[in-house]
Length: 166
Image (cartoon, rainbow, N blue to C red):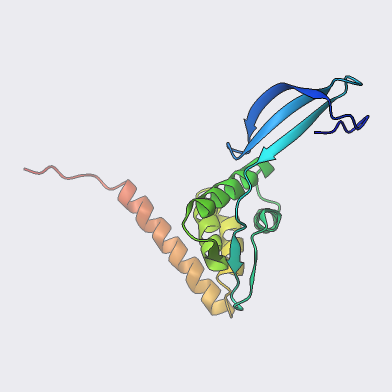
């Protein structure tokens, strides 16, 4: 590892920690020549995950694109950047833990929606409107009505009293 200050390759590791949910190792280093401190990250080299688009095209998974899409759905909502990063981390972890190296964009959308729904309903609906690819306002209205009905049923079952067995 070369020092970014003096380009010397003589340095020592001062501190080592895991980072990004255990998917990276962060090392603080100190240059033996100029005493400058710098940070390096080590990642496991994995086979790139391929995303199969609706059009049939395939492209490499891009985490920044996923974060940007979630941030767009959460615009002007009470969702912090750290929560968006957590969602992206969870989705990426789940995808990398599955067998195979190709996943559909619809599957990624479903995983994000699972995590947005309990966090913020407006962000959930915004995200769903893009990933479900609604063709007209009626389809969108049906989705919102279904979501409201499921929420009402969940609330009703939560507050329903249990009857004694005997």
